[in-house]
Length: 192
Length: 101
Image 1 (cartoon, rainbow over the protein chains, first blue to last red):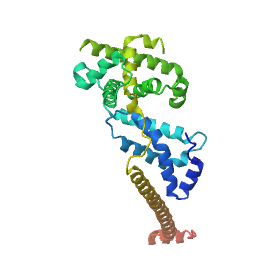
Image 2: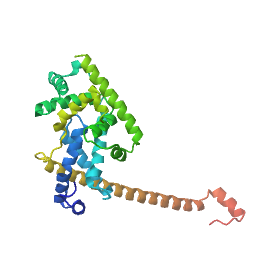
Image 3: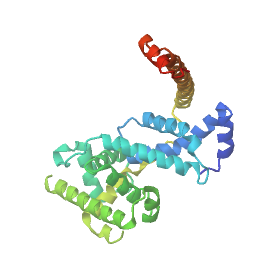
């Protein structure tokens, strides 16, 4: 991930006041931050503002970066923490009802049963809105955890390392989250 | 994961997630104007931080100087006032031949 640019050289140049080094770093880190923000925050949140906020934090804390791990890992953790703080400030929905869904989201719900494998861009957006609605009923940490496992395919060990939670705690949380998602999907099916 | 996927609701969840996957992909290119705006913000923030640090250091220096001056003045006043006895007390001390420094 860090191969396209020489991060150590960039950091040195940035310390010396070379603005082009900052440009290179931003260009290098933007895709990493953008992916995390898109994954962990609802689609409608102000993505560019949050990415900028994370970049500001990154640059103000660059002196804390020791260089023992790739900078993308260090920034990922910073980005995830910022997203979680954002989610904690948002209200958790008590539940999602069939009447809460837009007609497009209802269609996306039904289409997911059919197992259609090649949705177009609009279908993907409606499916995403529905996913965001289902996730909005979960506490922020649970929401991020299920996405790390189901979307990013992270192993329990990786999650344990990045969050500091024990494996058994992660397993227990995942079990509870899956049970909650099943219940919500069952409710949607029954209230059609 | 395979046992989880046997349950219809889990299949549904996985299918929904799979359908929405393209929306989770990050931007590979910077949005127009993003770089300029971010750099400007970083520079402004750095400048502000430097100013605050400078103000902070100066305030600290001024506070320490004032403290030293106050301590100096109060010590010298106290030393001076030790010899400024009330005339009655002074004569009493002189009568008892107590040395006044």
